[in-house]
Length: 136
Image (cartoon, rainbow, N blue to C red):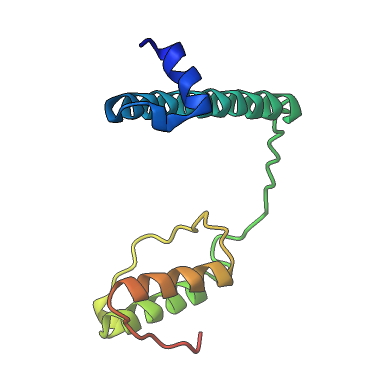
């Protein structure tokens, strides 16, 4: 019995088939259904790709704006160095006499306080619940 006859018999009465024919027919139906689902998913994937390409705006060239400030060389540098050295000394449990600051470079990090606090809480929970001073 070929597959088309098997599927025609399955349409009407599956009990007329033997157990091996029922097994083969069920495998054929399963594979056919899987192929249909795969083809539909591929169609949806290509439709989404086409929609994202058509809806995206063309990228514009970014203009670079350079702002120069007139900063006096020793303007508040001593206060910044004192504050940073005090923070480092506090973190290392040592005095400021044991710390030599050679260079201070401003970070390009633009995260706000909420994202930093969330990151600290996630890291502390991963490290076994390390408690820190929440009075920031």
